[in-house]
Length: 550
Image (cartoon, rainbow, N blue to C red):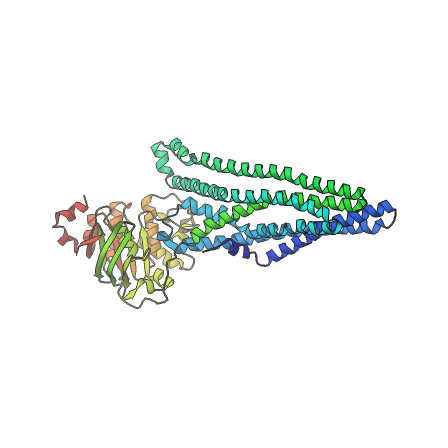
């Protein structure tokens, strides 16, 4: 969990610098009216005013320097805090895995990591600025009391009204800022969803309808924006009325005190400047607005950071054939039972097909085997070691996954197959084994072809996904990963899998009877339960089994 205070504290060395400059600015602001007042009295007296004017010039120069340093420190603080927060958010999203991020839309997550993180990073500088803004009016009150208590009384009454205006503004704008950011996230989520399926949308001729669906939230966003500006305008108008009242009250009392001889002309000038400082509190609406947006950004970041990461152990996987054991494994999502008390002891080094009708639990079974999610109860072991006890590095080195719609990551085709840590020889071997080399070699730049510009069919993308998983040393989990391949290529890859010279365990989710027939063993799932475990030829005698393949 992360709080507004946690984000604000990340300013580290910048916040003290911002605070120090704020104190300098406040000191200059408080000292300047007194110095100028002395200058006025000296000018009236006709002597000694030069030193006061020089002092005023030096104070103004000091104030300008402090403002420049404050602007730099504020920008640097926000930049560093944003980078820190984004790093934490991205790390949490990645470590949460598909199960941890299931409740978040992709576009909404992007908005939280990008725009909302920047808003949240304003917490430190905005809080320091708000606190520092208290010093000038408090100092003005003290200095006015030194000049004349009646001036301080008039000033205090007016400032109280300004504080009431600011307090009301802060309360009203907090909820609206959060609602505005949430609506932005929903619009981004809809846009991301549409971009993912843009080919389908274009082919179906539903572009205009999709545009209306995405932009349908704009009126709501507009409403939140209008409410925000109305609150700001109302508070600004109130401050614009109350602020001059402070000045008028102080000048009225000061004029009477001047006439009665209790204060000098210079002291009246200084008092008027201090009154202006009190009236200037109304300008804090902008800072309070930043704090409200920062609080909303922190709230939305905290929801992401609350994602439970997949915990990993520290154990290596001992030498073994890749024996996979399911011990009382059940997966429950809400009221739906996706897997129900699965108990299996699968021999290592075999090709095992997983079949079943739609909704039978095949993909959940594959995800549990690859530890892309954890079971609600029970455990899965690989060569006698529970997957939850295995270190992340050892697990991902031993277990490879390929999917029906692989998301290719990297700048080039070569990077999509393997990271830079993998040698080019192994990259080429993986591409040849999965028959990806056949089309990659025909590309203008081969494995250095830009991934974004490479023309690929669904089957070619699947072959790259298979090549990416090929480096796994113990277990390959293929979740319908050959569904887009043509029959000839699928047969070639199936042959490669069944004759795997590395003798890994191959767990293949499939809808094709030919793939099941080539497997050593078939797991037949039905509504989350294991209906049968046997070779394809033995299960084929069951009418219900044949119906699985249509």
